[in-house]
Picture 1 (cartoon, helix red, strand yellow):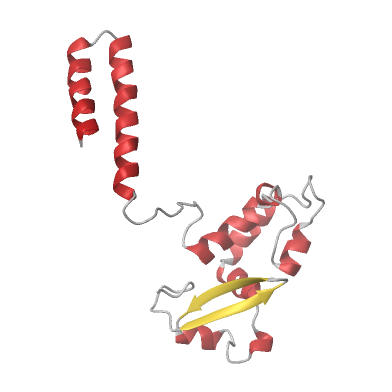
Picture 2: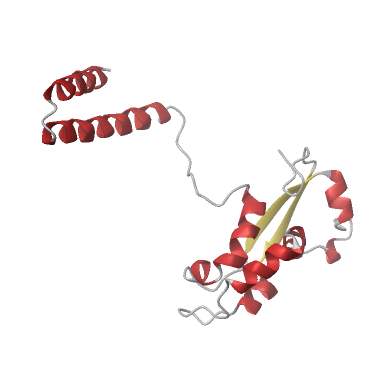
Length: 161
């Protein structure tokens, strides 16, 4: 595993209990020492992650952030204080503040999901088949019958596999 702050090899795995849930962070030894991980009372994951965002990025992010979620009333100060959000709409309201933290915490902000082992090929083949059927319909609509025949043959071959 990689350190979530500097991408060196992680050797320290810290789990913090937060209101019935858990937050985990993987750090290399030097990042853990720099941030006082040896003194658990002084360690706050939110503070560490916020310190890693350059000051200029924090200021521009704050400019894009709503002061309060229109759905639940949670404020940006509430988020900064407790390190969690009030509702799902807070993600949109506080996007400028949250995206940089999520990117640092999860190595990206787009959820890819997981695929059970052995299913990836099946899912990929199904998606390819759907795309070919759409291409076939478009070729027929455009009266490109030679192209449509080739696509039809590709579909049949894929369905046999």
